[in-house]
Image 1: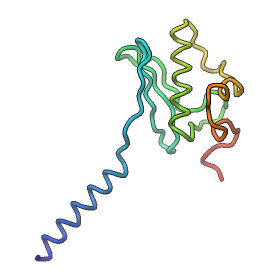
Image 2: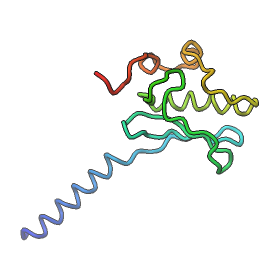
Image 3: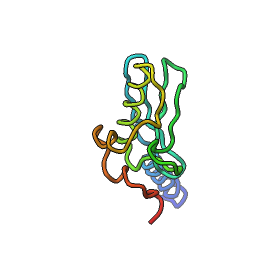
Image 4: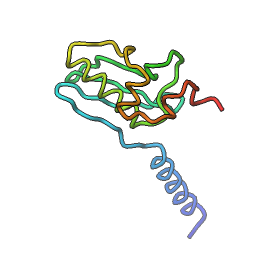
Length: 122
């Protein structure tokens, strides 16, 4: 095999491996007329978006029970809180900041997302 073919094959393999590592299956769940989509923030934390049919009605990039700008450590926690928020919308309420830490714990949010520490700080 000549050098050019080998380089071509290696570059294709490298590109496909790189793509496989960066492409994730999006987490999405439908609740009535609302769809909750987990989003990845620039700092590799997670938030959620809520759509009513196809219209974006809420975007929450950070944990609503803290004031600093950092999202959830775990995708599943972002989905849990997004589902709670969609339920609030379905019941005519839209105060995402009314969510308390005890309520988030009751919903099943893991403890590392309930700590007041910014997940990007060591």
